[in-house]
Length: 245
Ligand SMILES: C[S@@+](CC[C@H](N)C(=O)[O-])C[C@H]1O[C@@H](n2cnc3c(N)ncnc32)[C@H](O)[C@@H]1O
Image (cartoon, rainbow, N blue to C red; front, side, top):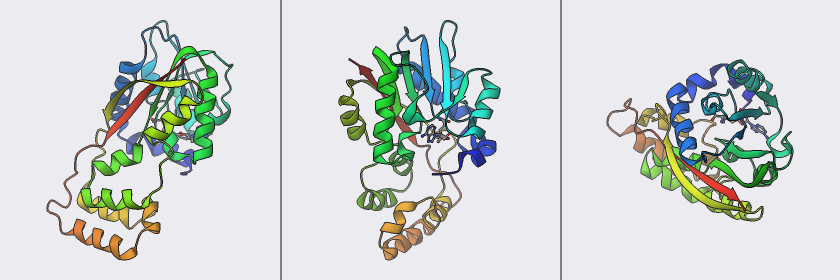
């Protein structure tokens, strides 16, 4: 995982900024019941999404493990952010109407993501709503080149945030699917040249498990595409709501 303490200063500018955060917050609002008065945003990062969820009559708390990210979030939401681990949430059982997880589960291994889902279920009151992104990295690749996406699909194991897996783990904690929507990663579309660079760098970890000749072929294919510096479409990120029975 990235060192998010280091990322804190550049995170907002490099992850779609205010436009992406607004799109994510709007999508969360579509899934949040009107009645949600206490919302916990887990892995709130810089709070760029979290702060947008505040409303009159709704209390929103952010929690993040990285002190650097939490400090930026705390400046946005004074008194509203705590440092803590998503797998051991520092909130009482049954205390939240909703828990949100935006872009967390895909970063975790299977055991940790299962612990995070269990922790979220514990903190939710009966009838409360968990809202989480799913299939995040797959969405990034789906917005890019089809051949690259197919090659990646062929050599990655099931992601920690795969929808089927989140539903299966959630079911074990009394969570059942209640809704779904998407939001655009505005400004995150990548050009063929940018994709070729990604395939040659550390961010595309799956390429280490792929046949080097296949990866070289993909980079050659990308280099031969027109409009080398024209960004492709923005990724469309799926977001789901699960309700605790
Ligand atoms: C990709 S960022 C997403 C931030 C924010 N949700 C957003 O959408 O802008 C992932 C965040 O998860 C946090 N994180 C990673 N593992 C965590 C854990 N076990 N507990 C709490 N936060 C964690 C990182 O510090 C980072 O701030």
